[in-house]
Each structure stands twice: as structure tokens, then as C-alpha cells.
Length: 588
Image 1 (cartoon, rainbow, N blue to C red):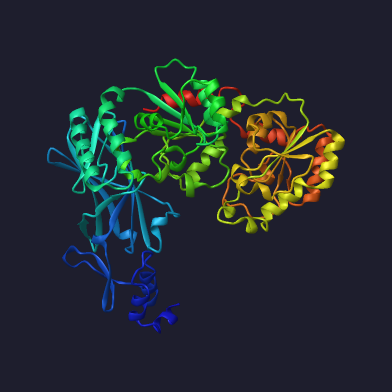
Image 2: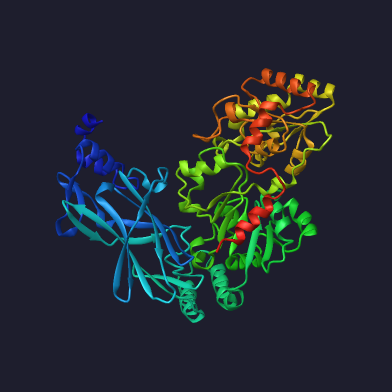
């Protein structure tokens, strides 16, 4: 590469990469010249090649992911990406109280998959935990200190807030507990909270909305105004908003709500789901305080809620302001996120569930080895966030059904997201499972033994469900509740679905049909061959052989897999909901 680039003039490289957000140009120059020349003249830290300056550290930006105050501690997390050697830099926080400065050094963490890094040579992801006192007025500033031959060069960088930071350059103040934190002139100001102080800031925000008229400004104006008016009445109310998916329930949140709604604890609890969902009427007839997702009431309660309890964690699923210029609402929606999980995490999912953009305050796990995996991979949650409590929906599982039913439940493939139907029809995923549910030998075997066959694919699969060939014997199920399917089935066929853990929890047999290597997760602690709760099979004919063996044995779980299940789960009782409820109550 160096040889090739040596024969390309710098003017050519500059011309072709003049608009270069990923800094491929700098990457090419680093290779071509085998590094850069560093300059610290006039405390301007820069790198250059012969004839041109490439980058100046002083022009870079702190991007903040987290700004919040909890239990008298200020938490700030963010990232600085640059072409400068990270070993030559430290990120510090300077807290000033009554003119006295105190300097805090950051904890540096690694998120190797951050998109912000692009082609940058170095990336500093930093965490701060700083004690604060509501009786003091304090200021906080971030600073990078560049080390140059024994000399530290302090550099104040501009601060920007990412969408999940709980503050923004528009919504510049927020209240946490007894604290009001505001941001101005690249500085955080922390004071004791009062309604008059909040009112002053919110009136400025309302005037800015009228003046600038950004997209969705009318909605933002309404909710900021409602926040100001209702704040004195709602500030001390305890509100929990509970939800599964926007359009579907029957997951951990519904089962948790069933338990928690019976508790007389002075907490207002609401379950929210789209009014168009088939589950809305069912839940409304069963529970009190079921409110339509994205209704005005739901959005008002969302900004005053202190806990969002959900089996989903992405903002696009739980935040009703997502996609509506979300930064306009940053300072008024500061609830703790409680992640009940959608299933057992058996893979390295740190590229999705990492702290810097999910920032949950409680993450429910089922097994000790699952909880330990959060320390192994790049999640970076502090101690006490990940707890082994058991999934709430497990409390409703039973192994007393006399039904004779085979359940086929493949997991999802991220590789299918952007494919059209013609491309999906050629994928191994579709071809393998379409073949399985139409396998004549399987159908005849099930008929002869009196078993029904239910095909329950992942919800994302239903956008192309018409591609699957139908027959008179296999039911393609889009309506049944998962709990009913688990309780009423005798044998499960899956590939990688975490729902297999539900089935094994009640000691029912299962088979893993893993025909190839198209699954989208990489590293994992769970080894199917040595830890799985059933045989791992790659061939369809062999799969039918194993199904026949189980049907001939009245679908009894084999001893080896029963022992593995007993070893895997910490709890096997009906108290998961209680443990989760008690753990949430302890979060301050």
C-alpha cells in the first residue's frame, strides 16, 4: 500500500477526498508517510505531513452519551475520537466549588464497535463518577490534557450531546432528585433544584421553540409547557410505565405487571401498548391503567415516570418521542430504564446492549454464567446493574399439559433485514425451514403418533410469511401466546432462539436444527454441544430421526439434558416477578 501511495500525488488524494467524513484521506497519508509529524506550538496540538497540516486536536469535540445525577453522584460518559495517540492524552473533569478546583481523572473503557470511531486511529471512551452535594453550587468542565515530553498541555474542547445523553444543546437543563443541572458556555452548572429555577430555564426553551420552529416544535412546545405546569404536582409521584413491544404484549413486562399491579405500594403503574394491537383489548379487560402507546396521556406520563420497565430496551420501542426530533425533549424525560429482557443472553451482544447508549439501571438475567458474561464483554455496566433474578414470564410456565404438539420456532437473521422477497426466497434460512414444515416424512410421523405441528416463526418473519408453502397439517401460527404454546407443546424444534430456555426451564425436550453458519451473533459463552438442552443437528433427515425417537419415548427429556437444565438456572420457582419487583424498589 505504501508503494502504491508513494506514486500518487498528495494533490490527487486531496481532490478525491475533499469531502471525507470518515477521514480515509488521513488514513492514506499515515500509510504513505509512515506516520505524521507532531507539533505543539502555541499549545496548538497538530499533526502534519510535508506541506500540509492534517488535524488539530484543539478542533475536536467531546461527544457525551450520559449525563445524569443519581444518589449524589454525577455520571458523565462520552467519547473523544482523533488521529492522536491515545497514550499521549488524558481526559479530566474539573469540578469547582466556591473557587476551589478538584480534578478527577476518567476511567477509560473500550467500545471497539463504536460507529463514531470510523477510521480514527484512537478513541478514548471515558466514564466519570463525581460526588456532588445539593447544598453546594458547583461547576463542571471537561478537558483533555496532552502529554508532550513531560509537559501537560490543557485543551478545552467543545461539548456535544448525543441523542441518549438526557441533555441537549436545546434542552439544556434537567432535574434529578434534589439537583438541577444546566449547561451553558461549555460548562455544567449544578445547584439545588427549585421550581423557580426550572421555570426560568423552561421559559427560555419555550421562547426558543417559537423563534426557531424546528421540526415537531409544536409538539415539543406543548409537552414542555405541560411539564412546567404539572411539575409541582407530579414531581414527587412515583410512576412506573410498563411495556413489552409497542404492538405486542405477552412477554416479561406483561407478566411482571400482572404481579406488580396487585402491590399496594403508593406507586402508580401503567401498562402501555398500541391501541391497534390485538393485545390491547385483552389487556384492558384484565388490568387497570392500560393506556394507548403514543396517546397524549402516555406521553405526559412518560416525561414524569421515574421507571420505564420493559422487555425492550431500544428507544425506538420504548420512547414515544423517538424520531420526533428527540433532542427537543432531552431534559424532561429522565426515567430509569429497567430491562426485563426478551430472553436469556447467550451471545456477546455488547455491540447492542452496551452502557453508553442503553444506560439501564437494572438488567435482569437468569443464570450466573449469563451475568458473568457481562463482565467478559464490552458492556461496561457498573456493579449491581446486572442481577440474576429470573425472567418474570417463567412464573407462568407449567409442565403438566397432556397436549401432543410439536413446536417449530426458528430465530431471526439480521442478514434478512434489507433483502426483498425474491432474495429471501433464495436464502438458506427460508429454504431450510420451508422444507422442514413441508417434510412429508415429518408430517406422516406426526399423524401416526397423533401430534400436531405448529410453526411459530419470529415476529419479523411475518413480513414475508406468504413465501412459506402451506399444507393441510402444519399450522403457521401468528395468534397464539408464547406461554400457551410452551405449556401445550411436547417438543420444540429451534435453531438458536433464546426461547429454548423457556422450554428447558420446564424440563421439556428440544432439538437445535443448526443447518449452517448464517446466525448473526459472534462470540458466545453458551456452547450448544456441551451446554445445550438437546441434540444439535445439521441435517434435515437426521432431525426427523431424532424427532421420531422422542415421539416414541412420549417426549421425555433425556437425563443428560435434564441435568444441564438443573445446573444452568439459579432459580426454579414461582418468585421471579417478586425478585424483580423487590430489586426495582431498591433503585434510588
